[in-house]
Every structure is written in structure tokens, then in C-alpha cells.
Amino acid sequence: MSTLNKHTSLELEDKEAIIQCKKQKLDKISVDNNSISNLENPIETLDNTQGGEQGFNNNYTVTDKNGDDEIKEKLLDILNLNYTDPEFIRRFCFAFKKNQEFTDETSHAVVYNSPFTAAILPNIFDDEFLSHVKDEIRNLDFNHKSNDLYEFHQSSDLRICDKPYLSRLRDAIYSDIFVRTMSDLVGIDLDYTPDLSAHKYEKGNYLLCHDDDIKDDDCMHGRRIAFIIYFVDKDWSKEDGGALELFNTNSQGHPDEVTLSIIPKWNQMAFFVLSPTSFHQVSEVLSSTKVRYSISGWFHGPLNTRLSRTDFLSPTPEDFNLSDIISPVYLNESNKQRILDSLHKSSYVLLPDFLRDDVFEKLMKSIKETGWEEKPTGPAFIRRYHLLKDSEIVDFKDFENIEIKDYRKSLIDFCKYVYEFFRSKPFAVYLNEISNWQVAGIASEFRQFQPGDYTLIHDQAQDRAGVDVTLFCIEGEWDKNWEGGTHYVAEEQELLAIHPQRNTLSITIRTAAEQNLIFHEVYEDDAIEGSNSKM
Image (cartoon, rainbow, N blue to C red; front, side, top):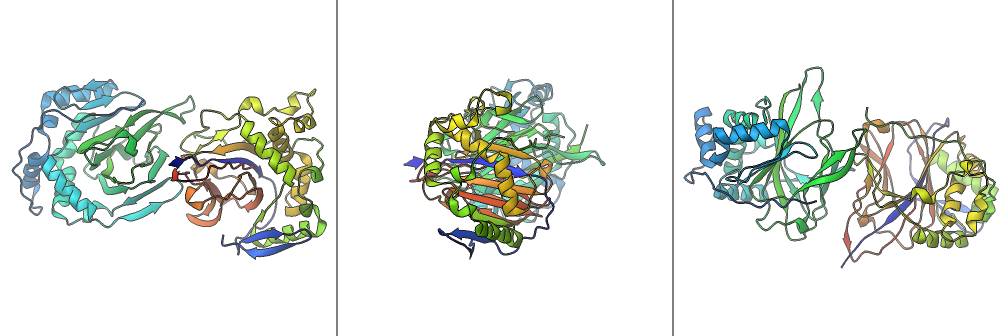
């Protein structure tokens, strides 16, 4: 039985402070009733059916690369000749360039006009030949690739591959006739230096939202067409996952929703035009018995800021009594000094059982009663998670007749009370006492992470140094296999990973060079459903 893991979080960031932060040994703060000690921290889907006439010559042999003429001859032996027919090319290219829908009755080739121009060519190569290629792909050495954006297995550049069938396919794709055919189909001048590699997606593997739009503006040259050739089992279905999902964009040019989902099909080539809005992803593979094999790459050719920084607000002047909310042990002056010392040493602490037991229990009940936005927040190339409904969190400064203390009395509103506490001046003063950071501005969220949710590192995330404060609200123990941890990275090196812990406050001093991300949460069999709240 598959259960959905949920991870809710409320996040605060303090942006103004002057302190030299060094990543040394990471410490965890352990507390008892009277003291704190440092412990080492180990720290609408389109199912494209195959069919149509196969214009192949099945008589082929595997030989070494000898010359252009032989490569062309070998390509024509394995390529579906429907796609080299001049009339087909004319009609297909007209639709592709005009961004019009098109379906060819003979080959079942399709052009999609939304959310951006994309196409599929079923039965692109000879079926028997491709079966031999798949056998060789299975025996390739794959490198495991994993970061905030993806998890899958990738081969080395196929330029150096010496396997007979696979190298023949590579030579065919690199050949003048194939590149010229692709140029004629899409109406774009393409050069003869495509990138090519094989990929293997097993259960739980994925590739999150991105645009692939890499170019050299000075040279006016870059990637123009992305393509994928599928080597999946012939019975691959929607339920197996691994779909190519394309996003539409909002008025700001940010990815909004998946509006086209292309199911992988054996011996099918999918491709699309690259642009700053060609956002796409590979959905998580769900099958435990099938592997999503593919060869993918880009065709290059001549070429014919997107996210504002986070808004930071001043702490709210509401009057809170710290002892009504925080566990007494963390209000002890000597313990506050120990926290400060630990932060100076390691730039990070974990404070277990941070909220009073009665406060945390009521908060968890309130979270269960609270409504969440049905649509995840984005943009998808940066983040995906669910926020508390806008109607549930009141900007109290605009409602003078409402007092925050009134929300402590109501179960459903209690989470608002706690939320405002972490945004308040009393908490800002407390944070200064235990970190020496002067809080000038706060950005906060009450968020829930469900399977498939994440945050990503992005080019616009280069914020100034600050403090990240996170309160984790989960009922039981969190399995690290569910992911959902917060990872701190600098210059592609992971410095710290923090995983959810019940009623634990994490405080991390972050330098300008560091960025944080939350790994894509996964579906896990027999998982315990939980909830996590980060501030």
C-alpha cells in the first residue's frame, strides 16, 4: 500500500546581520531540564498510440564507420522513410513553424501547439534494429546523477561509445542527412554537433522543471531543439510514470501548470523548441518492474530577469509572552549563551522540543483543521509546495479591531497565533539574544510539502547573508528515504543537510555564497503519514 508523506513548513529568514560564518563541525543541541550540551551531529494526459505504415528496409548489417556515403546508406536502412517524404516534410514543417496542431494519418506523427511547439515521430527507426540498440544500452555503465533538480542514471557522452548498434545509431543521428531532415521538419537551421547520451530512470527517479535554454548570446548560438528517443517496454503506460510534462507560463513568464503530458512509447522520438519558456520535466517513474531507457540530446543552431527577490517585512509589534510558547529550558540565560556559542562555532543548531508540549499539541491539531491551497505555489523551476490558504492568515496590521491573542482561543486559528509569534518583535529580540543577529526584515511562510514537492537552487537566489529559522511539525519520526530535507550548498558542495524532527527548531546562519534547497519528496510504500511545518 502506498501512503503519501506530507511535510509542512513555516519559514523565516533574517536578512541583516554582521557576523563571520564558518562551516566547521556541525553541532546538535541536546537539552535536559537544566542544561544544554553539544553533541556531534551525524548529521489532460495524451497517450500516443503507435501505428502506421513502417517504411523500412529490414536488411541491414552492423559495420564500422567508413564514410559519409555509407552512413547515409545505413541511415536509410534504419530510418522510417515516411519522415523523409517531401510532402510529409512540407506539411509537418508548415504546422511546426506556424505552431499549429497537426496529425499525419500515415505515420501518426503529431505536432502540438500548446503550451509550446512540440512533436512526436512514432516508429522513428527500424524496430528490430532498435531492439539491438536497447540490449546494448542495458549493458552500458551508467553514472548515478542526483541533486536538487533530478535523480536518474546517465551514460557517458555517446561520442566515445564503441558498441556496434549503438554507435551506428549515434552516427546516423550525427549524419548530414538526419540533421538536414530535422532542420527541414522544424524549419530551423541546425548544425552538426548534437549532444547525445543515454539515460536510465528507475522507480523513484525524476527530472524536475527546467527550460534547457542554454545559449551563448555573444556568439548568437545555442540549443534550439531538445529530443528524446524512447526505449521503454512496449506495454509502458501512464501508470508507470516517467512522462514528459510540458508547462504553460503565467504573465511573468514563469512555469504555471502542466498542460501536456507525453507518455513514453517504444521507438518514438519526442522533440520541442527551446526558449526561455520551454519549461518541462520528467515525472517520477512509479513502476518497480520497468525501467525508462532513453537517448536524449539537443540540436544546436544560430539564435534568431525573471524572478524578483523575496520581500522582507519588518517584525510585527505584537506583544507575546515567550514563556507562553517556548519551552522554559530555552529561556534560561545560561542555555541561551550555550546556543549562542554553538552558533558561533558551527553556524547551526537544532533545538528539540522547542515549543511547550501543550502549545505543540494544539498546533498540530490546528494544522490538521487548517485549509491549504489546492494549487501548489511556484514557479515550478524554483519551487513547488502548498501554502496555508490566504484566507487563513490575516495581515493583522490591516485589521486594528483584531487582536492576535483572540486566535489563541480557537483551535482552527491557533496556527495563525503561532505563525504570528515567529514574525513578532519579541521573537526577533529572542533570536538576537541567541545569535547576535539584528533582525531588520522577515520573510515567512507556513507551507506543506507533499510527495513531488521541492525547492530548487536558481540563479536569482543569491540573497545576502541571513538566518534561516525552521520549526518542524511532524507527529512521528521522519524517514530520510522520504527526502524532504533541507540541504545547504556552496559551490556545488553540500555543507549541511537538515531532516525534519518533531517539534524541533533549526537555526542556520547562512552566508551569501550558500543556498538552500529541499529535495523532491517521493512516494514510499508503507510510509507513515506525517506533517511538517517550517518557519
